[in-house]
Amino acid sequence: MRRNTWMSAIFTISCLTVFDHLQCVQSFGDIKDVSSASKRIASAADSDPHVSVRREESPPKKRARESLGTSRSLSRTGSSSEDLIITSENTSSLRTGKCALKKLQTFPAADKLASLEVDKNVWRCYMQTLKAFNNWMLDFLRLPMDLAEKETFREQMKTVIKSLSQLFEQKIYELRGQEFTWEPLPSDVSLMIGEKWKVAWLSSVADISKTWKNLDPKSRRAGSIIRRGSDLMIDSFIDMDRLGIISPGCLSHFLNKVDRGNLIATHVISRYSFKFPNIYDVYLNLNTKLSLTECPSTKKMTGLMRELEPGSWERIEFYCLRNWLIQYQSIYPKEGRFAAIKDRFLEVASPDNEFPVTKLQAFLGALFTHISSQSRIRENEKAKKLTEFKFLYDMMSFIMSYRSSSISAEFMGGMQRSWLLDQIRAFEESVGLISSIMYSVHVRRKATLLTIPTRRPVLRKMLAKMTDKLVDSSSNRRISSFSDFADGDLSSGSYEQQAKNNAWDLESKTKPPALIQALSTDPIEIRDSIEKINHQFRNYRIQLEALKQRHAFIHPTFCAFVGDFSPLSVYLLRVYELEVERTILHNTRHR
Image (cartoon, rainbow, N blue to C red):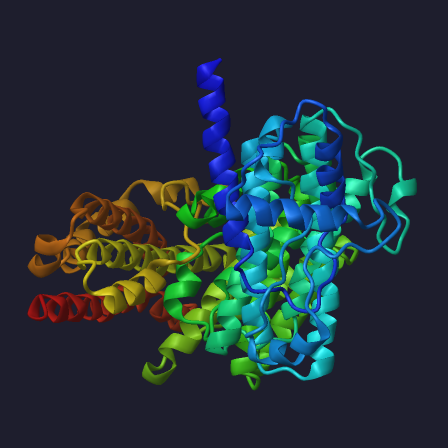
């Protein structure tokens, strides 16, 4: 009994601390409505006969009780709540972000919460979520906007916050075994049957992404707001799944039937968008689905991704690729041939469009022909061309991942008979080689980050940003979409032997310098990445040797194009390696 009393006292003090802290937080804005359901929780606490009230109260408790009493003077239903209120005289100060928060009037006193046995984790998460959204909204309102834009933002966020509150508070009522009355949005959610009301609220939470659709992600301030908002959005869904606020069935229905991949795709685009499509970012993400399931920074989304069906994955990958293609095209608008391929892909591959198989095969044939027509890369076009090649690879991989069942055996047979497939296989392995090089650069950067002392926060932040990328573990990659159609003789005999004969030269060039080996705290990961380079180089070299023997006289230009990827990969590794070395030396001098 004594132990329970102490536990209750500890929880009471904790809740009071959170409550007192929240009263000092700045306000959302003109939002007058978080959720009047909070008042129902407070009212229920009043009516509980088991709640004892202390005669002496500390100032925080007294403020909480007085605020609660004010809240109870409002009607329990049918009137707008005054959870977070900005008075009219403070409206103008919103524009400078200095508006103060009036007392929270609806959250129950901490001792009553404890006596009602509200689940501590749900309540704590609820408070933390509101605080995080509050801080984000204040920062958003500091961006350059006119009054109309600010008002639109406030109205959008009012719905988002109300939706979150309804979902969290329903769970609190459920844990206490009490009935919860849903408050409808403008569309009468209360009339819906089953869990459809939850789906409607989830949709409203996901709509937070509409608030930043007109912001420029290339702007440092706006980009930071977008990334933080995206994290808030996805973290809310992760928390609601983790705490059982939404059931697996409800979550699956929302993600696959209602949202259809938009939530995850929006998060990826907002969180991992790049200002300028560069070789490092583009080649690290060899396959979006694989990267999402294996990237350390997306591990938290495992529960959400587990519910996704193939159709939702298709939309996620398509939406992400479409966004990156559009970004690339905005930088290089005059690339006519690539632009034509891109436009045809977005039309034919879109999950929202249905075309006859003949049109899909015609596009795939045009894509193959475009790839096979490539020539040696000019020095001043390396970055642009390599980025373009990766996108061509992505288009091809997407179609083979989600539309291969529509491609006839006759079509693929024709590709093999024309020897076009040999060129495509060589192209795939060339892209895979550059990707393995970029992965090794990535792990070297991570190892370097671990050597930077905490007293160098600026340098640590810079390197942390450089390593916060969408990337897989490089252990489960499948480079080729056409290996099942490949010539079985390629993996044995003279082609493989010639590949081995050329491998030793690359191995000596891909080893990290002694400086990096000495300072890296995780050299095993670096050595493993080098092994993956050597393995991929062998696959690349087999395809190159086959091309030389079969097509050297027919397609000499393309053979030379593929052959350039070997020295090019070493060049790229050296460029990025020098950058890492400079960082280490700079850090050493300033110890």
